[in-house]
Image (cartoon, rainbow, N blue to C red; front, side):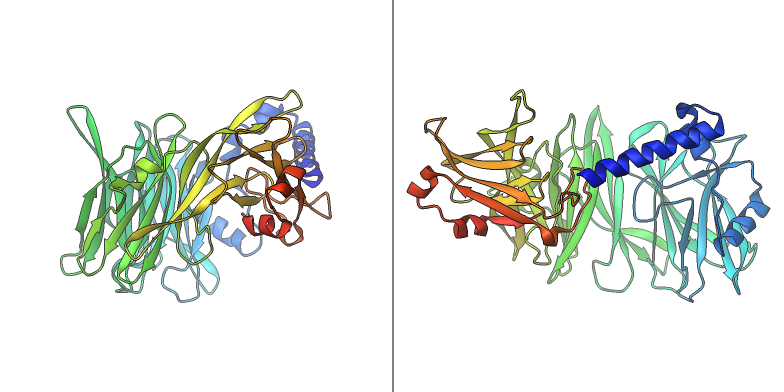
Length: 450
């Protein structure tokens, strides 16, 4: 924690010094128009910037994708796997910032040149992907454009790179533009080309419905065609992430969504290769989306590290709480039950208290009904207490995280990881715990790193 605070203070100090040298206020230093100015690249990338600015000029503002794997002012990729990089740059002329352009560049013998310039289909760039949907040499470019008039819907444009020659005509062909909420590319049928699963909304008489539709590329007709579609049993305001895994002939999509208010939930959508159709499985005649509603920012992940993704469900525990400060303010705590979907069945991986601050999970399967948890933020101690017992003498055992070096941070709320191999846990068993036959070995078996 000391290192984190020192780093944060150093960053703020540097910002203040820079602001002072520039003669501007701190507000002006962080103003959007300053952040949009093209950066000065160095080394061989400086040639890329020079080629770009020689074509479009310098009176421009650059756009950086807001999400996804590819972020930055200059997006570098290899369009045809020939070992030479290409680049995409999104920008707008300062005289008309509402019209975003996409510029494609390539190189020959390390000399960059312009391939073509194209007008986008939105007012900002949300996400960019590169993949192959037609099993040909050149990649396609997928761009999600943000739209000013809609917070939920976006526009997905698919572009095919038909030529990388300098200033070639029709070097980038538009395959489709689709109104979406979000999407993911994947090879669901194993044909070495990608299909697209996208989510979209419909509205009828004021009632909004959402769907997932799977698209494939029809090489004969040179267009995208729907393979399967399924109506979703839930409404959402945005999608936080879409992950996927595969089991035999089933390709599974795990969708983490945000609903109205501060709630989040997850759903699983399965594509079966034999039937060629999407479907949404249920557990106990209920959809996972109705069971996984939660307020905590816990998303689908491979929780038990077996190669398959798992889904978090929130379990309420009225007795559990966290003490947030020295004044004794109490914050309610909940548990998480993780589910995995294998062989067409949902199976529970156990009930856990997730201690994100200290970076460990405490399994409470056999204890959930009779015990509750109190977490002390000040002293960083997790206590397990017995329900329906004397409040002054109901602590059974406690777990605290120990690091040999105070500067090492196990896990901060923003996801900053430290050296978890040095993490140790102090386990203290009370007299009540001893009478209940709790042992240190048993408690250690309940602890796992997040």
